[in-house]
Image (cartoon, rainbow, N blue to C red; front, side):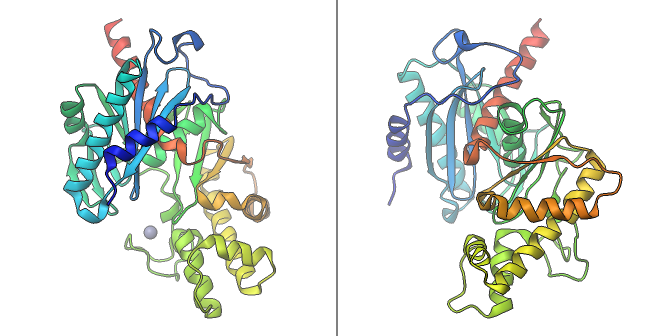
Length: 350
Ligand SMILES: [Zn+2]
């Protein structure tokens, strides 16, 4: 059994180094207001199906004291909530022991998140439904709390501090087990009216395709998500033993396995079709590819670019770039959401 608190303490102690991110377009504070200084920092939390990850984020984007603990999703929704709040309390205690002035908390959650009410409306992976997480966290931690969505928070961090910095319209597309999407305008997430914007993974790309858990048929996820790529490869060639992930399909495609090449190219082509629709609607300057499958590098980007170029008519194609913050983007973005909350309060007071 793993003790999440002990794990958090060990991780926090081990991750004591200060990590400086490349550049920032945040409007406030320079290096003089970094951690421990008069500007203080925020605590950013990223709740995923497997881990809760946290980081202290200074206003200039400096990050330190990163830690993580298991989400405990197998133990049910109440256990997940306990794990999240215990981890946050522990991270705050560790930060304060180290002399940090933590001013607010940002939480990025998977699932459908209503950022107005501070509620996780639904999350399949951690079985939360209508959970007033912002209020519960604020009561437990005694600090202002901002609640956001994990993909939009990751996109926010990439747009301000990573691969999308300096651009007005950024489309962030993490490709992992599924295909996510977030639209960032002027350095802010655009969540839509019902918190469902930029769900590129659920754009129907092949109307006669496979059933998607969302209820539609032929969503991009069913062709280009990591789970789908592995499944389609196993179906195509009856692989024994079956491959367990899309990374293996990518390796086999690179080695010339014809079935792997076919499944991989179909995935990239479906992505190109869907992303051209997104480009047509939003005209982003950059398309930031993130998530585990972006590790495939040019093996993903080259066929995607080719598919976009073959289809484009009047559209100005965005630069295809790779995310720079990796799996840290969600918690850094959550920390930025907390800074935005503080700045909004300061603006109201001013
Ligand atoms: Zn779907």
